[in-house]
Amino acid sequence: MTASRAGKLLRKPGDPQRATFLELFFDLAFVYVLTQLSQVLSRDLTWRGAFHTMVLLLAVWWVWCSTATVPDRFDPQRPAIQALVIATLVGSLVMAVALPEVFDAQGLVFAGAYVAIQVGRSLGLLIALRGHELQRGAVRTLVWFGVSAVPWIAGALVHGAAREALWTLAVALDYLAGKLRYPIPGLGHSPASELPSAAEHLAERHRQFFIIALGELILVSASTLGGEGFAPDRTTAFLVSIATTVLLWRIYIYRAGEVSAAAIAGSTDPARLGLSAFYAHLVMVAGVVVTAVGAELVIAHPTGHPQPAWIAVILGGPALFLAGRARFEYAVFARVSWDRPIGLLALAALAPVMLLVPSLVATLAATAVLAGVAISDAAHARGRPPEPPSPPD
Image (cartoon, rainbow, N blue to C red; front, side):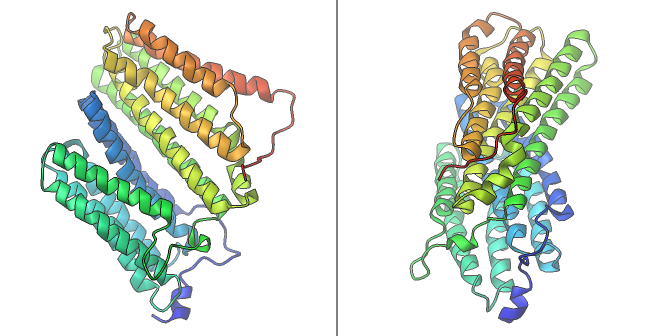
């Protein structure tokens, strides 16, 4: 393929920045991915189980991020780009199927699918961009994903602590490479011009994935109620879970979620701000996944005496969300509303007391804290003009 033909794969400066149906289709797979991920944690509510879930979340999030940046630079109407995205969707579903047994019998399936996605995408772009200067970017990512493939596959061939250590190394390599912009001797690192920077597209992709995460919370809550039956206490727990979902959405969208595109566009370094927002969304999505685990426990056992691990997920999920939301707010406005840290302190202060009450009361308390944050946001906005974004320099 000549440089001119390869250049036709790129988005044109005047092309719409809105996310496409192809990207929405790709995101649908991650409702199932996140549902499976919440099952990993719910089956092992220990520190080790939390660590396993974190490693796996980092892996699936990197798959999504690496793929979400492709339509930011390349025309999603081109068959080659569509094939790459759809192939990643299939690979992501394979990873998701393996998730519940990934630290047992299905480790090689998960690691193999992950490596195939990351290496295959880079290889596909390398071939498609033959003769174009952007081919060097595909070379950089191919080399780095080839390096991290070694501990991914090696970890799948061993068990226990050895697998945990090797996969932790693999995830660290992937994120370090991204942070350093894939440096290669002789080629240097990826220039800022190759990083995602289409403001409207990046912001919309962030919002879409967060909505996907909320969809996972709704799915877990509804399926748990359906499996347990419509007893009054379980139905109440379900309604509280839905209220929590609404509050997470409301807190997210006000106001950083609404103006993040303008913040990225107005930043002196749009690529850096976009990357910061990606990491903030990772923490928020982790909070939603943990909240889903808590919702499943409470709907199944609304009057049960909570164990410390139950309280950790019931209160920890909203706390993670608020921490990520505070980081996102700082990226957009260069400041953090006082109600975010107060909400975190309130959740921490509630933890000892919630060990003494039924799990339904504990989740009501967590929801009340989120409601307080949302009410504070609404009170702050009343009678004032909308605050413009002012991202940090």
